[in-house]
Length: 105
Image (cartoon, rainbow, N blue to C red; front, top):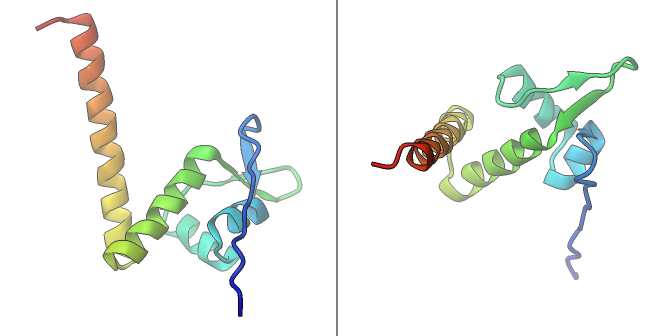
């Protein structure tokens, strides 16, 4: 049997993606997304029609979370912790770069 790759194109000019777009882009079920929301690993917004919407930051978080689980075989809590640590390190690097830019040492 031939395996076909699924390519999902997300319109990056759009600020939000729907639950179904997120599921397609990450190849995961809505139930898994609901778990990520429940454990506050990702944040979602509800529209007036009660549909879940996600910004592109959350799409990146889901993809990184999935890679951490797959590649490092981390459980839910471990992947969530590492994901938060990665984001914190990136934020600190950005702050250091800003400080270096305005305050030459």
